[in-house]
Image 1 (cartoon, rainbow, N blue to C red):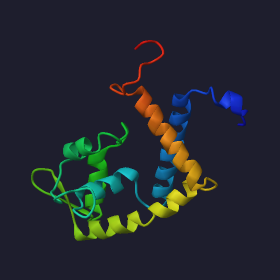
Image 2: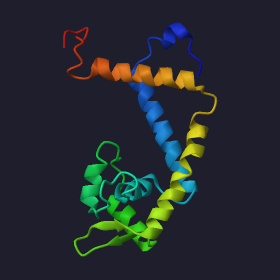
Image 3: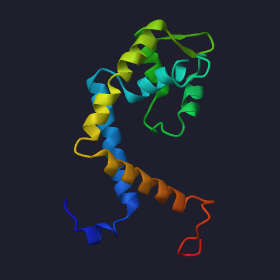
Length: 159
């Protein structure tokens, strides 16, 4: 789809950011699935690793994991099922309270899965130079700032 620049400047940002979000997340998830794991499985390992997102490496229940991932978990993600799959593969151990802990094999797998990140990122960024990407991120940050409560900016409708 080609839109002239004048019209492009009037396009609604929410429409394009939603399309970009769905396309990028869908692509990442397909690429991870193709490599034998799901995005939620990778997040679980990351949240349980003291060498990644966990400050202490303590075991966590599915509810605690969901709370830790609240900003980015998708409604269709079933962390109980994903963690149980990881446990069945020996990557997690489950204690009597239902909390999951990372095993040594789970940590090794997290590191292996992490190595796919730069390749997937390169595919997403193909044909986009860093300067354009940086500008895009800055524009998105400004859109967020302009529309967040407490931004100090008044909306055109007085809201």
